[in-house]
Length: 145
Image 1 (cartoon, rainbow, N blue to C red):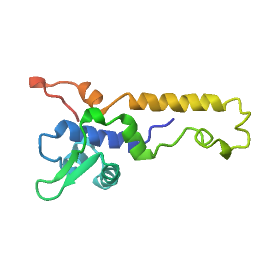
Image 2: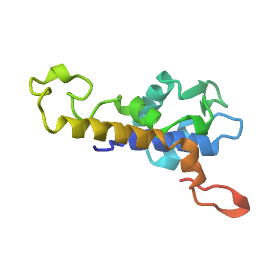
Image 3: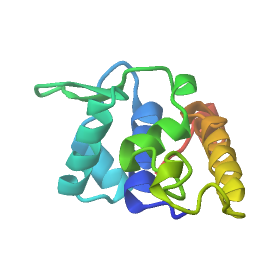
Image 4: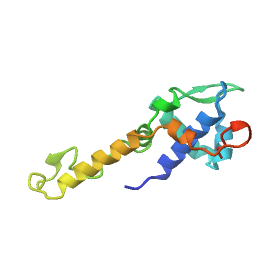
């Protein structure tokens, strides 16, 4: 399994919004600057996060993006599936008929187990878990850059 730039940057954008959110939406320009992600690429990521309902937006001078759910309710699996789709490791895991060997394949059971374990792992961590592990700076505030 390879974690793509889309997943990594999408997660960083969500984390930046979660940490920076103080009742006002976070501007895309702030995320782009802090995370060193090109604005054009970030727009694509944010559009996908909005389509999946992880982000909302507010237009205008004081506009920007905000989480639509609490950080504890956004799993890393939600982010992964949003950015890459819930793609199995091997095509025959969800669709045994896609392979003529699936009924007697000796490795298919391993792919099924690995697929399940990876999903369980990603589902077991939330945005809040990541926020809780950010380093603290003065006054107990969390630092994220």
